[in-house]
Image 1 (cartoon, rainbow, N blue to C red):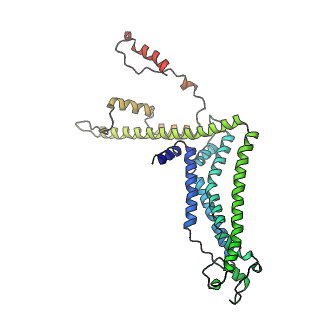
Image 2 (image 1 turned 180 degrees about the vertical axis):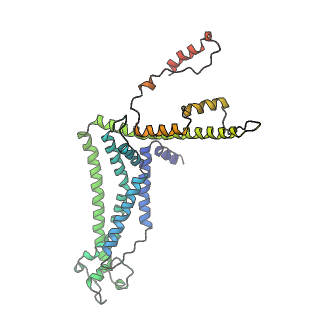
Image 3 (image 1 turned 180 degrees about the horizontal axis):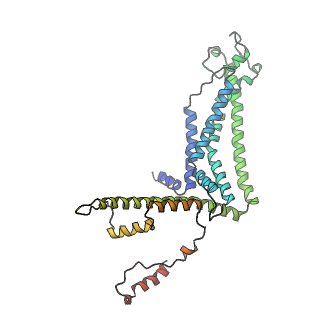
Length: 338
């Protein structure tokens, strides 16, 4: 149970880990779908190859677009690519990095499906049993009244009566399955070698500083969008609370109807109202909210936080008299405590 918690904490640590977790889940789902899929070859010369290629190509396409859909990098990349320039210039390198990360993760599940189908061999047998020369094998049934093409098309159908007492079907299936597994292992080896060479060669030709900057700003875009969404949720909650309270207070007749706080809130009403005022940021009308959201989309702020970083800290303590010196002491202590 503790290991499961550690795995969940890892995948929840950042959006990249979440995307990796989703891609792994999709890959496992693709394997489960294939193992539970009832594959029935039509055993008809005109449809064997068409059916097999459909089973091998259509599900990977679905899994690819599903991977693109659930990948968070897709939304971040499209927002950065389609947004107006405004006060912030666009960085094509960041968009390319996000696009590359999205494609790599989205291709995982389709590649797993293709590799599993090739290593299993059933689809390959259905598709290419017609391409095998029957003269290479003995025991071909000749008393069925069928031509060679139809007999070879029925090789994937092990329950067919023409192969009841014949080892011909097993020999042909074993032969084609060997080719299928060879292709599957070759593709897997090629992908592993390609990934290893990419990891080894890329640092030799890539500017490490530029790569760090690209990764930093791609992570920044993701974190910025998350923080903006969280801040909007807090503002919407406080805005709704104020609106509801104001509605009930307007409906009062003799006494003021106040909404009770939940029992788990231990702060006083004054502190809660102060925090709500801070989270509202002075935006108390629908027109102001719409104007703020339009400004955020059409004119995102510059990537310069000098003003707020160097803003003087305000003293939150309450001085009884100016001569007490409590505020001065608090400001002095804050310089050392950070």
